[in-house]
Image (cartoon, rainbow, N blue to C red; front, side):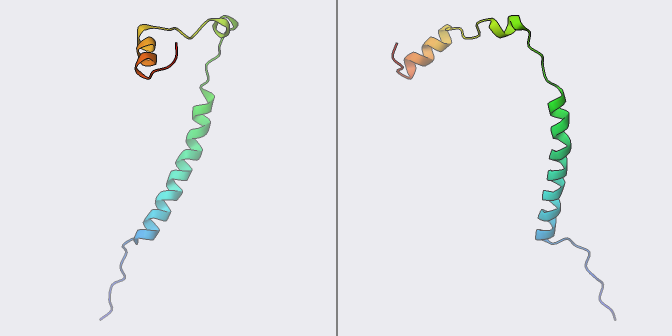
Length: 67
């Protein structure tokens, strides 16, 4: 009698296919992510963003930053 050929996928073959699939998925996701970019107005660029709130002061105090 003939033995049946096994159709299972080996561990190395599985990882190779998985890596190729992840690479293909990343290649298609990159152009999609780069198309959605926010446009910042001149007014937004010039406004102050850093605010020394109570949380920031507490962080500085706890981590012993010089004042």
